[in-house]
Image (tube, rainbow, N blue to C red):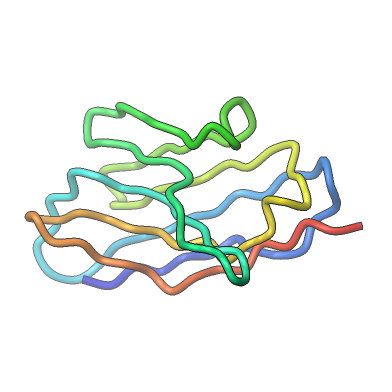
Length: 114
């Protein structure tokens, strides 16, 4: 199973970005899809998760600003990030749980700076 993430970049504070991550290869029966992020010198922390039946959870730091969604037909998870802050700067990783096994995508850099 491979995960291909896209959508990172440089944005000014208050701006928006949308991340996408598509899963492919092998038999896919993805129960959980998620986004994590890791800032320099910090742990990799969960940002948002979404289950197959669209139950979502968010880190307190992004509630009300970020929205996670998924397209099961395309095996793709999205992260809409609004009102971005400098403290959102990090490498963002997508994660899926497929048939009980976890898979990570390569990270995509998000930089929030004026």
